[in-house]
Image 1 (cartoon, rainbow, N blue to C red):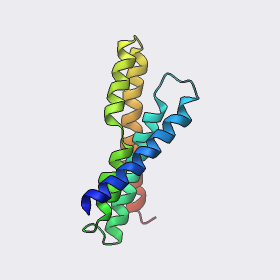
Image 2 (cartoon, rainbow, N blue to C red; image 1 turned 60 degrees about the vertical axis):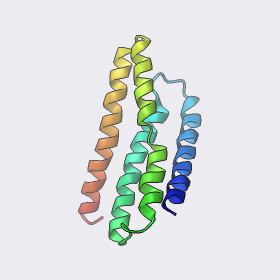
Image 3 (tube, rainbow, N blue to C red; image 1 turned 180 degrees about the horizontal axis):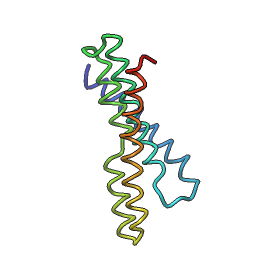
Image 4 (cartoon, helix red, strand yellow; image 1 turned 135 degrees about the vertical axis):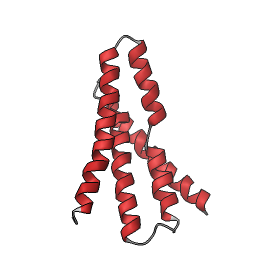
Length: 123
C-alpha cells in the first residue's frame, strides 16, 4: 500500500510540475521559471503536509507516503534544476545560472522558514 501511495502522489506532483512548465514556457524567459516555481511550491507543500500530519496525528498513517514522499518528490525538480543551471552556464549565461541557483535556494528555503514561523505562531 505504501508503494501505491508514493506512486499516486508522485504522479500528481509530476503532472502539476508539467502543467507549470506549460504555463511558464510561454513567457519566453531564459530563467527556468517552471523549475523555480516547482521547487518553491514543493517546499511549501512539504511544510504544509508535515504540519498537517503532525496536527492531525497522521504521521504514522499512509498520508506521508502520498503527500511527502510521493507528491512533493514528484513536484520537486532538483535534477532538472541542476541540468538547467548547467545548461545556462555552458551556454555562456553565467549570471543567469547564478541567479537561478540563488533564487531557487532563497524561495524554497525561505518558504520553509516563513511557513514554519507562521505556523509556530499559531496561525
